[in-house]
Length: 375
Image 1 (cartoon, rainbow, N blue to C red):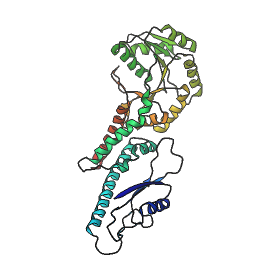
Image 2: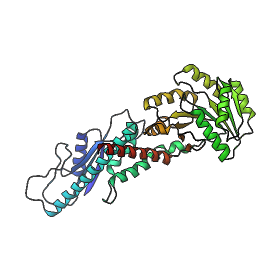
Image 3: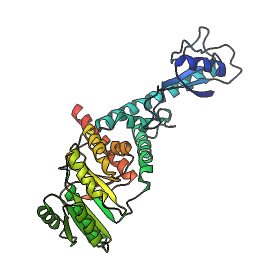
Image 4: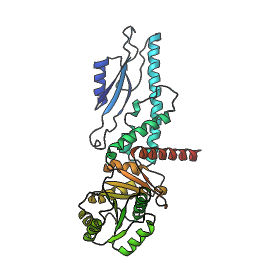
């Protein structure tokens, strides 16, 4: 049996190529729109992948199968009963079609799960591409488990290149919209660095209410035993950073601002612009934010040239698709996840495999809950 795939713009083109290459006995096994190959590849026309096959045994005699008008089906020709070799040929095709149908059902189930997790359809296309051709060779492996394992690998590889660079500066600046728990998250990281990693840490608060902000940071970072300073102007921030050059880590907390407030965004940018030394700017976001709002916030804060993301409030949502969407949308990593009120325990570093596991575990849990409701 000879099997061949064709990438074409329309079915008529595929029919002509198949007849030229494989002859009129060829059978179309499957055809489907070709998944997008990258996030940038969503504006041109979608191509088709058509798979055809023909029995390469020259001793079969009469033609028993043929192409018919581009339809995806097997058509036995009129005549006597099929000889034994031809029956075996038909059984092979039947097995292939049944395997593909079985796998397709699980792929569609996973597509629904990921949609329920708020993963963007474009990202889902990237995760599921080529899986339609990956059929388990035996029935020993649960197809759902099989697809899950492959998707975990694909989700990991999808974001792996983004995680090529880890934060390597000694100056971290935290920015973000109001109400995402930015100061609390900074306190968790500062305490982890000082208490667990034994680093010399200094904290600086940029706020229009310096006394209140400093007192809040001191209260939250008692375990860190780190000095806390206030800065109300860009010059004061530059001076404060300069005063703590002997520290291994300097963490700068900024006041939360509405992302659409252009005046406050420009004012915050003026603070960051005076920091001429290498720095990592962390954009702190809430995992409970809807995708459309999330993209708007990311776009607005992109003026600050942030390099990393931190997601908080994982305990306030049951869907984690926004994590993967944000990485694919920005090309920047989610470095930490946070939820809960315990300092510093409720903060976890993230790497590609962890991100994939969280996403797929969440998708599985949503699926199980939906199944229980139906019962």
